[in-house]
Amino acid sequence: MSVSHCSDEGSSLMPKRAKLDTSLVLGFSDEDKRGTIQPHDDALVVTFRIWGYDVRRVMVDEGSAAKVMYPDLYRRLSLRPQDLTAYSSSLVSFEGRSIIPMGMIRLPVQTGSDVVEVDFIMVDAFSPYMAILGRPWLHTLMAVSSTLHQKMKYPSRGQVLEILGNQAMARQCLITAIQHRPETDTLATVENDL
Image (tube, rainbow, N blue to C red; front, side, top):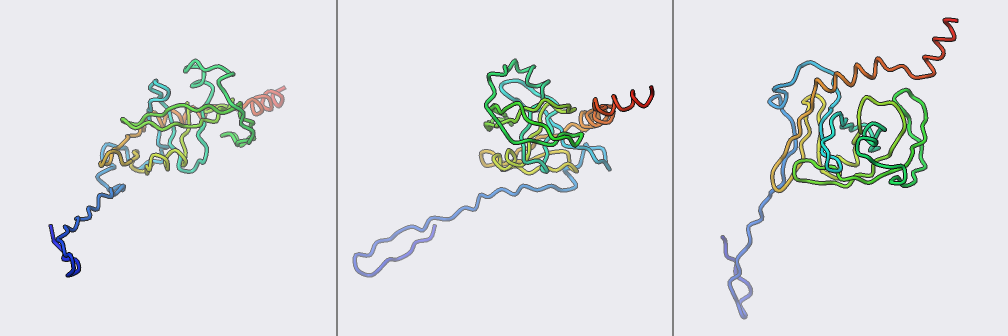
């Protein structure tokens, strides 16, 4: 501890407080790829605790500004239509169609011991995922994600915590998405076959 001297009149010794720089660095190195299958193009798919339930097949998507929930999860959480609040903007589905959301619902998403309230947009559309968490959620958690390293990192109580992705689950979701045929394509194929 250093000591500084104030003015001569009525001088008193005052300790200078050491300024501690406790900022955490959130980054990735080759070490973070350990345990992943490389090379790959897999999405970051994780399991989170949503509304008190462990929910698998949640995609963390830096490219999305939306936080989306799909019907399978909505039903499994035993939520009712009256639990939704109005939401009027349209979204674009995986098939490229414009869809009108059914509404919005706020639910807690837990990562480790941290809980963030998330306003999910409920859409009645096909998805191989149960939910998608995008940039707003990442920013609230102050998290960074890396599909290459199949993990996300975020600061919590003075340390950097990690959430690992599940590549097998990500690949299963990709296969499901590829095998899914929208109704319009199925109808067009049937009509062409007649």
